[in-house]
Image (cartoon, rainbow, N blue to C red):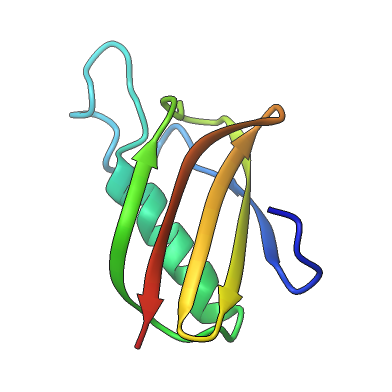
Length: 99
C-alpha cells in the first residue's frame, strides 16, 4: 500500500511485553491480538475513526519480540486496509470497517 494519505508508523513490541511469557515459552511470538490492538490504536489516533469490525486478517509470518515493522493504514470512506511490513515483506494484512 502506498497511498499519499496513508497512516504510517513503526511498530515494535518489546521483549518485556506482558503477553509474551505464555506465548510461547522458550520461543516467544507476538500474539496477533497485540498487533491488531496496536493497528486499531493507530487508526483511531490518526484521525480515521474507531475500528468497529475486522473483515479479513491474514497472518503471513510470525512477528518476534523486538522486531520492527512498518504499519501502513489506508482509509476509503468507512473502510480501512492495513498491513505490517518487515524487511520489505508483508507479515500481516487485513481490512475492516469504521464506526
